[in-house]
Length: 110
Length: 116
Image (cartoon, rainbow over all chains, first blue to last red; front, side):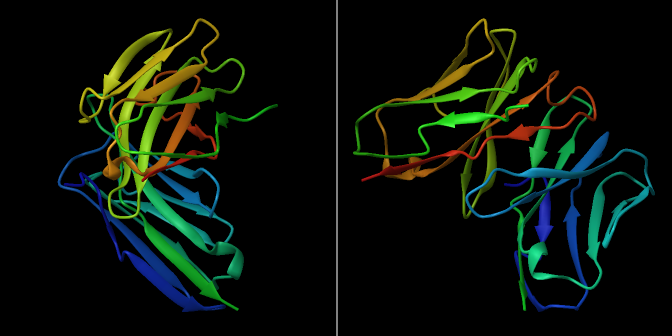
C-alpha cells in the first residue's frame, strides 16, 4: 500500500494543453518534493514545498501544497514534449522518513 | 562535480544466484539511500546508510542487505534471487539524512537487474 497516492497513473496530452497531477495522503508531511524521471535516468528534484498552502512556480510548472500538508498538486501550463516523463511526489514525515508515490507517467505528443 | 555513479548499469542473473550493486555518491555526501523501482510499485525504499551505519530500513526480506564504506561508497547485495527481484535499483545520495530536512536527493541512473 502506497502512503502517497498519485493520480492519474497515466496522462497523454497534446502539446500546448494543460495538465494537473495529484498527490494525496492521509498522513501529514513536514515537506513534500516533486521529482521528474526521464527514461533511462534517475529522478531529478523539481521543487520542495514546506508550508501548508504554499504555491511555487517554476516557469510553466506550478506546485501547490495543501493547507493540511497532506496533499499536493503539480500543474503544467502549455505542455511541451520535453515535459514528458514520470512525475514522482515524495513526502517527508515527522519521523524523518521519506516516502515516494508510484508516479504519474506524462506523455506530451507533438 | 561528478554525479552519483552506479555500477553495473545492466545485469542478468538466474534464480538462486546473488548480486552485488555498487553506488558512488557525490563527493562530500554522507548519506546513501537505495530504492527498488518497478512499474507497478513505484519507488520502494530499501535502506539508508549514513557514516557507515544503516539508519533506516524498508520492508524488504533479509535477502536484501547493504553496507557503506568509509569513503561513503555503498553496496547492496541480494541473495537467492527470485523472479520478482527484477527491477531498476536506484541509489541516491544526500548531504545529510534524507528525511531530516528539506534537502535534495541526487539519484544515479540505476542498475537494471533482470532475473531469469
